[in-house]
Image (cartoon, rainbow, N blue to C red; front, top):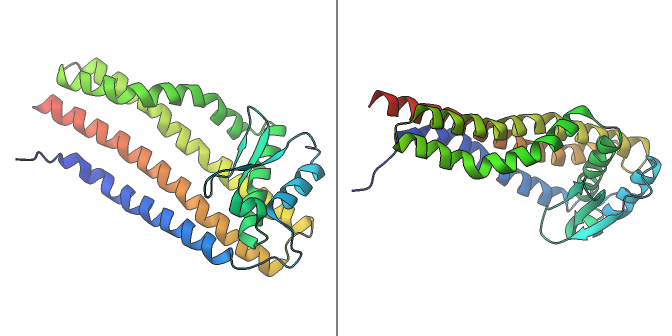
Length: 228
């Protein structure tokens, strides 16, 4: 006999949204990767131009392996673009590249949500490794305090996902504004780039929803254990 934990039902809506978000970002990026920008700038050229215009001459743009692995590294102050974005001249590539520039500018300006998120990284790294272990030790030992500590530790991951939302949306807003003001993309192109960024933002919404669902599940497991 296999044991089915009914609390898994709590995660089902989040799992469905996460699957849809991943499908949406992949399909949207693929669709608009076929739409070449009129000016013909590549993602790396666009990133370099926008970084320079923001006074970030010392932030290099590097190629990174993988697909849609684009990111800005605040510790090393390096902007890394995946091959499709680095060399691509599509509106999708330029949208993603400029989004990462948005993060670099946030870092330069000490954008508060980004600063808070970065400060949470070591906390989340610790809590993600030990929250579940401590929680389930508490459940098996019928120790309510340990279970509560596990829930509190996991809440750090929830806060991290929630604070990520304004960081990502702000980076996208900055990206579209820069693409327009620099004349890199024109009106119709900007709308298509915006669709790519909106699809990417959905993945962060899904991650936040999943984190909230997980902590609700932990509370449900603890309550059920207390009643047994």
